[in-house]
Every structure is written in structure tokens, then in C-alpha cells.
Image 1 (tube, rainbow, N blue to C red):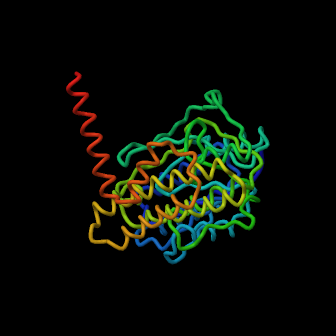
Image 2 (image 1 turned 135 degrees about the vertical axis):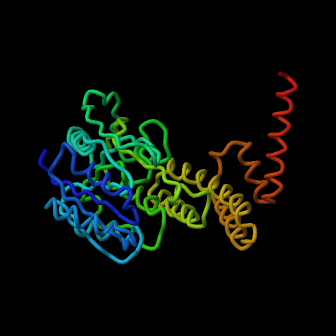
Image 3 (image 1 turned 30 degrees about the horizontal axis):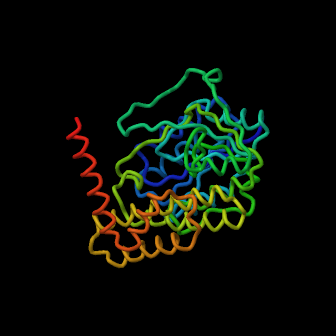
Length: 336
């Protein structure tokens, strides 16, 4: 295995975590690497740390750019990358020392285009895990999926693939004519299905080789903000794509996920930003348009009733559900 792997690290205000991230990449058992550190206009010392590592290791390339967002970061890094393979590591996360070795081994052994591993959530105050033990023999379960099977795993389940880029190794050729949409957040949701659509085979190991840091100051750590509405836009894009490509299962899955997210975002907006009346109308209209436009045969009778109530009056739907939960709990208390 002598393929060059380009490892892309998007960086913005992560000086506290950056050294741990870079060290975990440098300490990989697979060493034929090109490490691309992209400093997206960080106001802290992240850029200095990048330059420091570039002086120590000739495999490291550094891009300094004005703050432009993750999509621009990824596109600039992809344009610079010369490796046959692409991996991404978020700058506040870190990886097992065999992360790249095992992903590449599986990709080659099963003649796949994308290799995926499981991941573990870690807390902000958790100590760095060296994970020096070798885990080749611990790969108890591996799944080899065709294109349609892989697309069906985007929303979880056993051997889940998910939309994010960071627990995967891609053949770089998959990115030909595919780039991240600039100006969008949750950019992975816009692109994941397109990359899977170009893959003939995807191999997935349940081994957790990626360590994802839960930070309370990150987008995913926040209770709610309007940037999350980009998720609805991305899911709309995925529905259009899956319908055009004839991926009926993916369409049905995405349709249901979209409707559930729309309801959740409506109630979150109502709770945290009750003055945003136009946003509430916008979210409800998106829900109604999507729900009424498409065939809903995959939905259960109970779900259809819930969705119909939301279309009529979201507050009524919420009140009825709360009443149902209250009465159910009261009955259970009386029984016990």
C-alpha cells in the first residue's frame, strides 16, 4: 500500500485542540501522507501552530485564507491535493493511529471507492487517547455495500454511513466535477449522496477509529440557531436528486427526515425566537408544500394524522400531542 493520502484539516479558532489533532495524524501507522492544514482566517494562534508544524514536517502544506467558510476551505484543499485518496479530520477531533491504515486496507481488499469507519464521541475535558493497541483482529464486522445499499445507510442503522466526511476515505476521482456548495452550512448533507452515487462499492467497518469532540461552543453544541435551517434546504436538494436518479428508498427516507426536522425547527423557533413570525410562516409553508406535494404512502396512519394537524394549526398539533402524553402517563400511574 503506497498510495498517497491527502488529509485535509479545516481550521477555525481551534488552537486549544489543534496540536492534538495534528499529532494524531502525524502518528499514523500509514505514513505516505500529504497533510493540508487550511487556516480559515482564525483570529487566534491556529495559523501560527500550522506554520510551526509545516517547518517540522515536509509532508505538511498550509493554506492561509480570509474567513470564507468550510465549503471554500474544502474546495481550496481539494484543488491543492495531489493524493489518490482523500480523508478529512476536523481540527478539534483526533483519530486512532490506525485510522488511515485500516480504511485504506479495507478499501483495497474489497475493491471499494469509499471506506468508512465507526466513531466515538468524546468530551471537551477528556484526556487524549493514544490507542496504541493494534485493532486489526478487532474488525469483527465489515459490510460491503453497493451504491443503493450505501445510500440507504445515510440516516443510520447498522453499518451507518451518515453524511459527514470525517470518518471516511475517498478515492479522489469521486470529487471530479463535484465541489462543496459555497455559502452553505451543513455542507456535507448537500454533497454526501452525490459522492455515494459515483461509488460502485462502499466498505464499512464498525471499528471506532475516529474521535469526535463534543464542544459546547460549536454549532452542534448550540441549542438552536437559524443556520440549522440550511438542513432543510440540503434535504430538499437530496429529495430532488433521489427522485431524479430513481432512488425511491432514499427519497422516502429523506422525505420523512425533512418533515420531522421542519416540525422540530418550527417549535424550536417558537420557543427561542417567538418574535420571528416570518420564520415560523416560512418553515410551516416548507412543511406543507413538501407534505402535500409528494406521495405519502410510506407514512403510518398516526404519522399522517400528526402531519395533517400540523398543516391545520401547529399549536393545535402540539396541544393534542401534549394532552395525549399527559393522559397516557396518568393512566399508567393509575395502573401501577
